[in-house]
Image 1: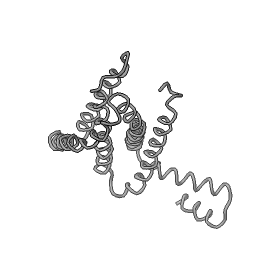
Image 2: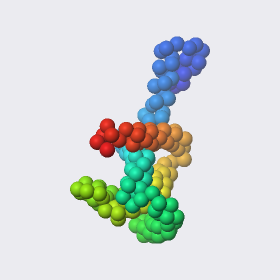
Image 3: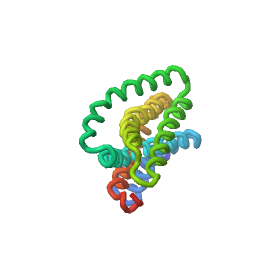
Image 4: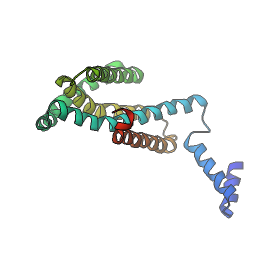
Length: 199
């Protein structure tokens, strides 16, 4: 095995070429270099979905709080948080029913993501209107953001767990987790510098 021989040779002495060879070997394994292109593209899609989901969640959280306090009022926020359980229970029940009836991970993901996308489009349209946004849009954003974090990210990891062979999980899951965290960091940075993006 040439790669094994190269690794044993590098173990005998440290050099920049050996270090680069080991790094390239690790990257090749972490990004499934020995797998078919279709498999690699599928996991690239999952990585993008995790990155965008966690990044958008980190970005929406401060917007949700700022909009709610500005439109509805800071005194009402504890009430909204106390009512969160009443909203979460029917959402989780609806998700469970969809999971059991759709019988397809693709249709489930399309349905769930489509519903949240529609909700955020409605909220964005309400915010784009002249004057202060209506109070209902602040309430909708508050609960859409809260339930999205509970539903979408676990759904993606569940789908990944279902389609990933056990022997592949140790190689790909750390890479996907790392890329998802990059999304979270990016979302937080965008939220912290919202003024530079027109916010």
